[in-house]
Each structure stands twice: as C-alpha cells, then as structure tokens.
Image (cartoon, rainbow, N blue to C red; front, side):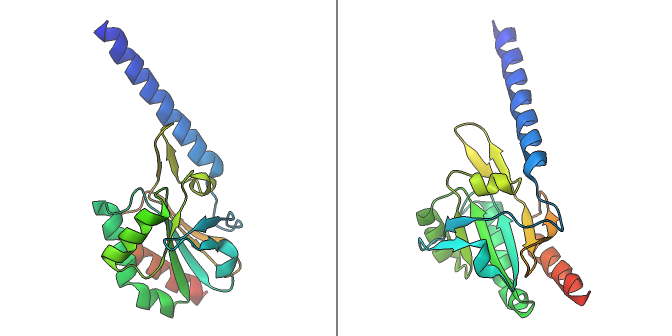
Length: 179
C-alpha cells in the first residue's frame, strides 16, 4: 500500500513539473518581441496598463509572495535603486498573484515607491512565462523583464537572484542605452 502511494506521489509530482515546464516554455516572451499586454490593479486599486509606460523603460518583475524574505529583499533593492533607475528613464512594477490589499500592506511596510500589480488569477504571469500553477495554488516565478520605450522586450532574466537583480538591470539598462 505504501509503495503504491509513494509511486503515485512521485508520478504526480513529475507530471506537475513537466506540465509547468511545458507551459513556461510555450509562453515565455523573447527579446525583440512585443511585451504582452496587461491591465492589473495596483496596491491602491488603480488599473495599470502597459501602454502608460510607452516612451520610457519599464522594469517588470514577477515575484512569488508579498513580505517573504526573498521578495522583500528584491523589492528593497529596487526601492534603493530608484534614483539610478529614474536617471535611466525607467519605471518599476512588481507583479504577484497576491491581492491589492496585501500589496498595499507590503508597499507601506517597506516604503516601496513603485506599483505592485495584483495578478489574482495569474493570467498575466502566464503570458510572461512566469507562473507556477499547482492547480489550486498559483505563484509567480521570480523573473524580470526590461521593456523598451517602444513596448518591446529588451532583456529577460529568469529565476533571478533577489540580491543581484536590481544591479543587473541597472547595468544592462546602461548598456542598452549606450547603443
């Protein structure tokens, strides 16, 4: 009985991982492609769309959950880099499947000066190849996209390190703008 249960769990876990990997590859936008659209509420309940950032660079980063250690570090690094990012003409938006109320608490607690977008159903994260879908539980993957002023994906970062992501983005934005 236990042998069958362990086998079923292993097979089920393998199927879930395979399905998630296949989904991520299918929807992951590449550099040079148009950024997938989005229209999501921020931490204040205001609907935000990709079009409002036309004419400037956008750092769109996906993260699993508000107020968890890695997510807090990543958000704080972007917060602490806002002056440099602003000088490069870039706006920042974080996206997770948490709701606007959770985002509001997270932003207030950590003094985050940028929009946190609530992707409750995970549809936007899926369009960006950034959704772990475990059936009843969904989490955003820790991926970041730099979108150029024309709305094209300029750089894709997969499975980012929260401590290094903001610095990598600043370095790449500097290089991209020197071209």
